[in-house]
Each structure stands twice: as C-alpha cells, then as structure tokens.
Amino acid sequence: MHESKLIIAGGSGFLGQVLARYFKTLGWEVIVFTRSPQANRVAREVQWHGETVSQWTRELEGATAIVNLCGRTVDCRYTTKNREEIMDSRMKPTRTLGEAIARCKNPPSVWLNASTATIYRHTHGPAWNESGEIGATPEAKDEFSVEVARAWEETFNTTATAHTRKVALRTAMVLGDGPNSVFPVLLRLARLGLGGRMGSGRQFVSWIHEADFCRAIEHVIARAEFSGPVNIAAPNPLTNAEMMHLFRGLVGMPFGLPASEWMLEVGAFFLRTETELIIKSRRVVPGRLLASGFQFQFERMPDALRELRMRMTGDVKCTLPLPAI
Image (tube, rainbow, N blue to C red; front, side):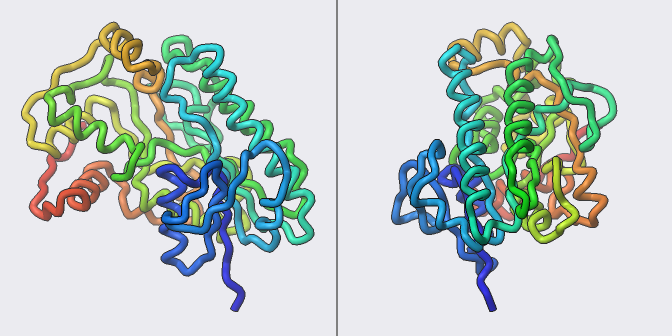
C-alpha cells in the first residue's frame, strides 16, 4: 500500500511540530520545509527559503497534502519594517508554493494554507461561521491584521493549481504545552496573581486544543468536499474574563489583578507587542467542520485546560471550576 506523504512548509515551530508528530503516529511520511534544518526533530527536514523554486520542489511530487504554516510572528510592534516582514513572510512562500505545485507532474492532492480567524470583524454579538463578516474595526485596532489576512487569502486563491484542491485554514488560538503556545504564558500570569480580565474582559476568545487542531487537519485532508475557507476553532468561544477565571482556577489562585486598556497599552509598549492581540473580540465557530460531522474531543475550554495541565504536571487530581456564563 502506498504511504501517505505530508509536506509541512514552515513546520519547525510549535504548530508544525505538533502536526508532524501527529501524522507520524498515523504512519505518514512527513517532510518539513524550514530555513534551518535540524537532524534531531520529529520529521525529515529540507532546507528552503520560500522565495524561489529550487531543489525542494521534487519533494512535492506525489505528496498527499501540503500544509503551509509560513509567517513571521505578529507578536511585535507594528513598525514599518515589521509590517513589511509580516506581509512578505506570508505572501512570498504562498506564491512560491503555488508556482512549484503548478510545475509538478504529480502535484499534491490538497494544499492547506494557513490563514487566521482574525479576518472576521470584531464582534460581541452572534458568532461568525465561514460566511461571517470580514473587515476591520477601529475599536479593535485590527486594521493591519485584517489587511494581512485578506492579502494572504487573495494570494492563495489566485495561484493557479488546477489539479490541487485548496483550503484556507482560518485558525483560532491553538492551546498546547509546547514552546510558543499561549497556554504556558497565561498559566504563568495566573500563578503570579496577574490573571484578571484584560481590558473590558467582554471580548470573545476563539480557541482550539492542539489535538483537535491536528484531527481537524486530517479531517479536511480526507474529505474532497472541503475547499475554500474553513474555520479551525472549537465550537464554544468564551469571553476573556471567563477564560482568565478558568486559568486562576487551574492554578488555585483566588484572585487576579485586572488590566485596564491603558495598562495594556503601556505593557504592550514595553513588551514590544500590540494590544490588538488581546482586545479584539474573536467570536468564531467551526460551521463547516460541524456540518461535516467532525467530533471535537475538547468542545469546551475547561476540558482542554484540564488535559493540558495534567499532561504538563502529571496532576491527575486537577480540578477546575466551570465559568459563570
């Protein structure tokens, strides 16, 4: 039986390594495209820069799927230089992959390209599924983020890959215990007594457990009906205040100092990041996944946090109160 093959472009980070481990356990051949190959990671790694078509192209031949996760972190100040790097790090690899796939004699069956749930308009109202409203909101200070998301998907959609199905992954915050996951960061804030609401606390947080992220990718790859945008998020977003309540319960901290919006602005300046990452209300649900029959292992954040906490500490007695919604 022919072995399934997955290519992960930009796969040396948290999400790429989580995906690589998951598909390796399924018996897939996994190849990671990265600027800095290492021999001791999960999968075989191939050097690439994502800007020109070269020797790495042959790895695409006969691949079952390719997942492109390339993109510089947005956890920074949006200076002119950083804006250019954020945009280029998404557009250039997407264009280059499109060109390489078009040249293949036996191209990948499906190409999943990273996008973001941030593309949807800031809202405290009903949740957005894939037909949700797209656009920026001055209150959320998200104009640049939405501009990047729209340009990223447009670049992806306009590539000519006639024999390869294409899916844009509008992914929410992924919770995991690996490096660069937000979970350990929020856990540390809660332990320090800093786990209060951020800003108004009314802004919604969309999220997904790393296990469901991997399972959703497998689900989308396997089903030919998936093309175009797909929301990769758990079905139950919650408010920032509710989320921080859960983290305080997770570490047994009875209080958490709140951070007003002006405090967030000051903190963001010194941490060299932007408040939009915190204050934007992202209320996104996985309409297409649910309609296709996908079953989440972690539908609600308390269950996801318990599992991650137990995995990190081995504390099988971990208890966690449900949010007061």
